[in-house]
Length: 498
Image (cartoon, rainbow, N blue to C red):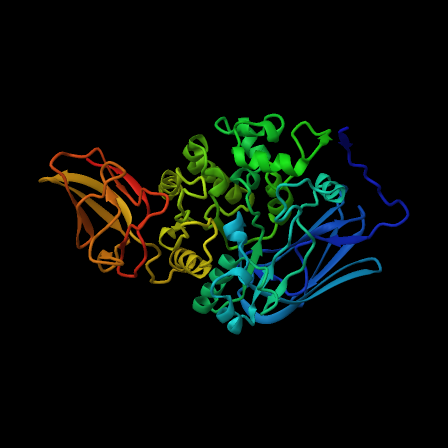
């Protein structure tokens, strides 16, 4: 017998708080420097709300829709803790130890979620983890690490109400708080702090196993001619979504029949992470976004071929929502993995889709990590290198540091005098070979290694006939070894030869 699941709202009628503030506000938080300071919340319509911040006081009236908003002027980064006090009538909310600095949003799936306590450098890193200038906002979520079984009734109740992410507070970065924190996010933040010496806030909302579609607004998907099908009908039976995430969703749904024709709320449902995680913090200015995602969208060729356009749609919407058209967005290219224990046959194509996105959006960058993958695990434990490489992009493009942001990226390929000549961006002081004397990873047929040599910032591939394409690192688990003078690896690519 199937259970029917409905949500009943029980509203208190005797008492109601005169003033509430958005959940993102707490002790120890970071507010974004050089942007208007926006404080917002809910209250009783018509009531007066007073806000005090940094020795400045402002007043507003709660609107008919119960919302209130107050803005303070732009501020520079400060190491001096500030207090925030919100009051209305006889109610008072106070937050302390607030700093002004840069906030970075850390999102994606399991490799962004991958915690510090499981990271290979954790034992050493914990010794320097007491960093009071780094603040962590790291909620858990419904369904975390639950697969192969149905969610409980209490979990379904919370999901139906849209309560996906758990309530939490900002925490000081220390040996305890980093244990469950995103390792990639932590290492990224540490690198930025060490170079820029300003407070860093890290908001971590990654969801293990999720598709990119959950982090894109449902309305944005619906308005897109290319992707509107992704929000048609029940997501559990929608062929426009990755097979794997629908199978996991059905396991978690169990035998419950949902009244919502779009299917049950879940961390994998299109638009759901955006609605429950991103939308509630849109009014909080941020510095930028780091994104480690792709595994769940890399198993069917249809999903692979559309990924760059999907991520472009996501980036454009985030920039519009935050009213920051130059909002930095840096992503991690999928690593390497074998095919024996994982369906990774399409990973070379997927990595190339991620590379192509570099030419489709401005103010973005991609950290290449194919050199640190695990052959038999989708979760490589070296997240320090990943975070450091993401930080290189931010340090160069966002903070203006004189640092090479990336390993070699192909610019063009031309055939001349019996050889295909590939030129590269970000060669630094010249291309190099890592791990041996022979250059590996180049091919003109996707499978057979070609005879390739380095000539300063170019690679020559000997061929009696003009090849149509040149491929590099075109294997799920690759031993390709082209690097630049900073020992940063070249991206997987397929490039047409002119």
